[in-house]
Structure formats: structure tokens, C-alpha cells
Length: 292
Length: 292
Image (tube, rainbow over all chains, first blue to last red; front, side):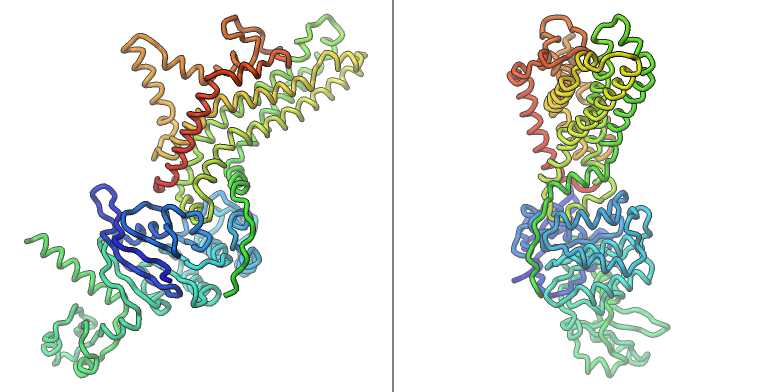
């Protein structure tokens, strides 16, 4: 069964269209990175999946309708957004009590043992904790819940490098077990791309790219071209061209890698580079559309 | 993955606990009111023995008990108003609503828990504090009486303690039921308004009343508002017969209560229906409104 399945998902705020008839399908056990510029519709899409916002079109999450069954769905779904979400007046012990009291799949011992590895005082209020500690606390609560889908919306925003690394390490080592599904959005793409199994680019409410990481590897190639091969390389119609230390780096779609290797050093592009290439292409389209 | 057997949960109970954690004023204010009443009584103790020995009306001894009851009822009302205005607003303002909504607790449970604070929890706390304070006052009076050579039996005759406390219970229930639509309205506004909940709650009714007065030289709206604030009294207590002049409010005792008339008054039931509608709308509001 698909974990998330959407057909014609649409959401507009007044005249601004945040999601424009999106079709998507996320299988169980995948780790999906949802990447897009600010205002692309990432958060709207996640909020629709979580039953936090109404929408038009069809959407099933774990077989449920999130807008009408949010409270039931949340027994199997966890959500972490940027660190400002935990109420500032809440005490650490109260957070544990509350989640234990309302969540049928919360295992308090797990959360306690995770917290024991941090320096978070048990009777502190959230407002007294550093940003990194708040993220740790939220992660401790979520990791103790036996959920099937975990949604992360910029979970490490504003955290320093150490906390960010620790956050994803804990998630992968202690939480992810091949049956759970994780959907994550972040601007720090480089930090998560090695853990993703799937990637989706979203721009202006539309899915621009939807691919597994293996497929990405087959389809896209980036070549740092020898200067004397530049003309030959350009003849193969690269998607995008950029300069790195005086040398041209060209990104190709659907061109045989053996062939490209003859032109320079060929490799699979990073998600960030691919993102820039595809998005600036989209911008170009928009600009052309506007001038027409 | 071992599927944990879901534990039983108590979402309503923990939702109420959460409200008390966040809004400690709902019991601290009542404790202060009780403390204030006791303090005032303590200062008047030195006069008590004289009063008891000399010529006095029964009311002279009963007054302090009636005062502390009135103080508690009034405190429930004032704190209840400010609580309700914040109840659905603060979680949207600090965006913690996204955290609360990520847990398997329905909007209905949450809003009903919030409505129960001024309607059930605060009156119950006020009753406990009132009963405790009045027993303490009575014991202090006994000590003074014994020291001043007044008989204990006389004191027990003159101060109908248990009756006074039954009246306090009755007053708290009557006022909560009569004011239910006020709290419903405030909850709705706090779930709807982006800011300035206080102004949105009080200016529109006031404006309608002023408009009516200027246009038609009548004041039906103002009479209606006044009736919703104080209209319980002529229905629930016989010293205020609906037509006759008010009698001394200090001396309400059991025989003066008219629960039958109160329960038969259309104002009560119309108010309760309106309260139910407003709370239902507030539940809808919590589902639809985004964080501020």
C-alpha cells in the first residue's frame, strides 16, 4: 500500500495557488526529500498530508483522509517542524506526561533513555532550553512513538552543525527501520542527500522532479569538461552549465555516461546542483512566458 | 517491527491538565481571592468578640462568609473571561498549535476541554477553596468566641455554615450555566481573530447597542447584554423577585433559592443552546484556522 497518495491535490490561498493539481505517490519504507524554493508549496503539501489544512482533490495517507480523520491518523504519523513549535511554557516532564497520556503508541522509557543522553534538565521549561535542546526534546518525544510516517519540515532550521548532524544520525540509527516512511524538507540538502531513497522537487505548486535516487544516478550526469572538449559537450545539449574554478561543469539528462566520460570527469550530480539546474530552467521558462 | 499494543489513553483528562499547566491563573487567582477574604476576616477578628457579646443582627456575623462567596464567584467570572479570550489564540500565536495537532487529540476534545475550564473546573476549584476558607473562618470564630466567653452553641446557631456553602455551590452552578454563552462567544472570537481578541469580543456588541440607541432611541441590545450578565439573579434567588425591589444580597439562605424558577426560565435554555452553537463553531474554527 502507498503511504501517501495524492491525485489532483490543489490548494489556493485567495488568488495565490500554493498547490497546483499535484499527483504524487510515496511508498512505505522510503525516505523522501521534498526540495523546493521558499514559497514553492512544500509546507502546504506537508500540512495537507497532516490534516492541518483543507484542500481540493484526492489525498489518502496510510489509507485515511487526513482532513477528516486527523486525530486517528496522528496515531501513526509524527511531525516535527522547526524548533519554535513546542510551547514555551511547557516543562520537559509535562511534555512526557502529556504525550504519554494522549498517544497510544508512546513508549515513555524510550523517550527517557534518549533524554538521559542529553543535558536537558527534566523540570526545565521549553523557553529555558537552547534551540538545539528543544530539537532534541522533540526528537525524543517522536522517536518514542511507534509511528509509520514521520514528517519533518525544516527540522534543523537554526541549529548549529553539531546538533544537525546528531539529529539525522539519531533518526537513522535509532528510528528508521525500513518499514517506516520519512518525508523531509530542508534547505540544507547536502546534509541529507546521502540518506534519501527518493527525491522530489517542487516549484510554484507543481512537482518538477520525482525520482528515486538510483534512477537519478542513471538519468543525470555532471561532467567537468576539458576546455578543449567544451564545444563538443555543448553540442549534446546540457541542461545547465556553470563555472567551477575556471572550468565548465555541464549537467546532462539522458545522455550515456560512457560517452560523457570521454569529455571530462563524469559523475552523478549532487541534489543541490541538480536543483539549481532544474529550477533556473523553470525560471527561464517563466521569463520567456512573461515576455511573450 | 513489533507492533506495540496501543495503550488506553485519556485525551480529555490530559487536555484539561494541559490547560491548567499553561494557565495557572485559573487556580492561583481563586487562591488569592480566598486568601484575601481570609486576611480581611483575620483583621476583623478583634471586633468579632465584641460584636458577639453585644446587641447584633445575625447578618453581622454572616456577612464575611457571604463576602468571600461573592468574591469567589466574581473571580471565576473575570479570570474565566480572560482565559477564554486567550484559549484558542495563544496556541495559534506561538504556533504551538502545530505541535498539539500532531498528536491524536481531536479538535472537539481540545475545545471542549478549554470550554470546561471556566464552566466546570474553575467553579469546582472555587467551591473547594470557598468551603475550606469558610470552615477556617468558623474555627477562628470559635477560638475567639471561647476566649470572649461566648457559647459555641450560640455561634453554631447564628452562622448557618453548611447552608452558606450549599448556597455557594448553587451560585457557582447558576452563574456558570447562565454565562455559558458568554464563554462560548469568547472562545469563538479567540479561535477566529488574528489579533486584539479583546476588542473583537467586546466592541461589536457594544457597537450594535450604540447603533440601535442612536437610530431607534431604544436599548433592547443593551438590555439583552445586561440580562446575560446579571439576569440569573432574579430567576435563581427569591430576594430578587422579577418585579419587586432587590433585597439585601448578603442574606441569601437555602429557603431563598428558587432552582425551579431558574430551570424553568427560557433565558437559561436559550442561552445554553446559543452556547452549544458557539462552541460548535469554535471547534470548526480550530480545525480551519491557520497559525497567526
